[in-house]
Image (cartoon, rainbow, N blue to C red; front, side, top):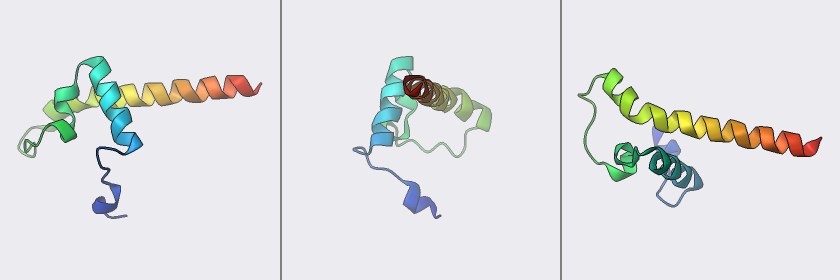
Length: 74
C-alpha cells in the first residue's frame, strides 16, 4: 500500500479521533494536521516524546472500547 493511500483528510473519523485524543492530553500542537513544520531533522526521541503519547492514548481508548463491547456480549 502506498503512503498516499493512507493519508486521511481532516474530516476522516481517524483524524477526528486522533485530534480528540491529542486535545484531551494536551498535545494538540504536535498533530501533523495542526503543524506544517518539517520534522525530518528532529531526532526520533524528540518525535516520540511529542507524538507518542497521542498514539498511546488512541490505543488505550480502542482497547477500552473493545473490552466494553465484549463485556456487553456476555
